[in-house]
Length: 384
Image (cartoon, rainbow, N blue to C red):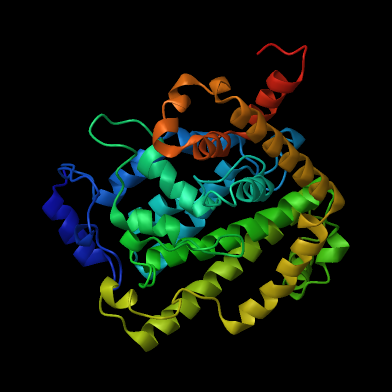
């Protein structure tokens, strides 16, 4: 059986100097004895997987609302894809895979039902009460709302994982400043890897889901240099390939090319900066984990096409606006009569205030649960 000393020796032997070692952790809010054969970050990962918030990701929207079809990605399948891509990058760069996986699995825990439209609705409603940000909500989930242990609130995760949640940033995610989590410092390389893995995952699976839904057309994608090149190579190699297999191969190749480029470019930057420790990384003023300028140029038209043709498609816009109305009406009815909330939720009102408690309750809902609640509360023929 591995001991804590052996785990430390393995990390020193296998991880790069700039990786975040578990024994260098700044610890937990509530001190705990170390587990006999798991590192701090393995323990974090396991607590996330067993949380209610993680399970609920199965029925939370990525782009397409859950009832649109079983094929489309949900927050859970997206999270697992991010974790897989992030682990691959971390392994190649000799970073702490356990920390990377834990951050990846936790990065979307604060998301609302109905994707970004749900977040927009809650942010508007809560504008005068602190607003709503899913990174902050994710921290709130792991620090307070998950009630699983008698000795402390929340999951009592490590400092580095909590930092990874609030400093997560991408095209859809804005890092937030929390004084106790050193906003003046750059995030760990492990956090930076998850940021880019998130972008790679949702860009490429949104292409896949967009094609499957019919909202994206292959002739539109063929105008993209990166897509067209891969498409031609596959067509030359497999003259009679099935359409679905061809799509799968293109998406797989797209991900592979972006991950390979990211690893090579990041290695170049690391050689130039030569950070001698994870502490040195946190002093760097720019992101170290990065694509090459060539890949950034290839990705830009792809992301522009996704925005114009998929995220702003009239059907997606209709779904988003309908979802916002659900959220707004649910919030109003709970706020007018908080006694309709479950007793365990009502108990938090004296501590957090009714608006924040209602916000927490709705943010934690799955798409399906929110739709069921709406029926129960507004349909006179539906049992409550």
